[in-house]
Length: 424
Ligand code: AMP
Ligand code: GLY
Image (cartoon, rainbow, N blue to C red; front, side):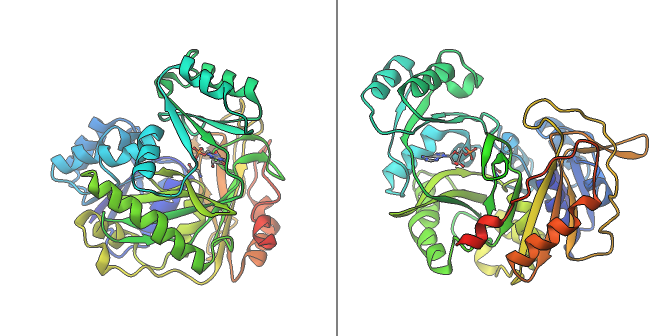
């Protein structure tokens, strides 16, 4: 079967890598892909949000399975269009993608179906929001733009002045454009976070090992937010008993709630979980694989990814058993100097064959491209150096012993990825 992977980041390299190990996949395309996917698949020069172009290509090539990496094409209704044309696409339809596409939608769903989450109110004008904030007295408080804002739409305000400024920036100054037509003002939850990526066909829910992202740019979780500077799995924060609670109180009720609303959700349901002193609460859902969590989680997956995705598309996930390696995985992001601010592109990357032939180290590409026969940087997050080991402590050790074998001028990475695992 021909498989098409949509996207161009580290997540998509990891998905392509897992598809390449599948017995089912006879040909793999990646649109638009990066220099890493080019080694495993045929890159196709169609952007991830060019839904018409992707559909035309998939029909031409008789693609048997399309796996969608980023959220934007899902929210645009890519899956509806592919299915309408008789093609199988892994991911929710437009209705289900609202879980990530609209915070007002997902928060109201949690409220209606008693799914544990932060208390909140929604607003469609800044005057009411500001009046509400003036009566609020518990800081920090969280202000969220309703729509997609490339991961930047959440502002944690430390005091009333910041909260009012956030509400006004989002709704009046439209710093996130149309994503700021509405906002959610919600209670700040204290605790440690985990990412649970689960497969679902709208009925059965099968989670992958829980992971932890590291969103801030600097060690010790300091500095501005990024797309994610590294991840590891499984995280000991989520014990088997806690996972059962999350399945019972959060994941299963969510899929059932969506069904009650007439939404048959299939694909990845990625729960951002806060472990509070009152138990796990859902911060939000994403409707796709996480980046960089996927680069830690998929290397642990023993079951054929194509089989799982097809079972989700066909409503047959109950027939699948997900098996994972009983080891730990970690990935550390090599970023361009200046990221998440401005950075240079086109810098040559050296040492890319350092891990060739090794099965416990993988260099997943993120923002890379091929220029004049050389692999160069093409984004802020450039590579995910990934290590597998029997336990997280030795995985951390291995990744940092080997990380400098891949390098480029101005490379920056965090030195404390995974260290949190050792404190649980
Ligand atoms: P995302 O929308 O996934 O980019 O994530 C926003 C981040 O904001 C989460 O991962 C949390 O770290 C933080 N966050 C969101 N909502 C809350 C909340 N109610 N309390 C505390 N932190 C939050
Ligand atoms: N790791 C955060 C995200 O994928 O949104």
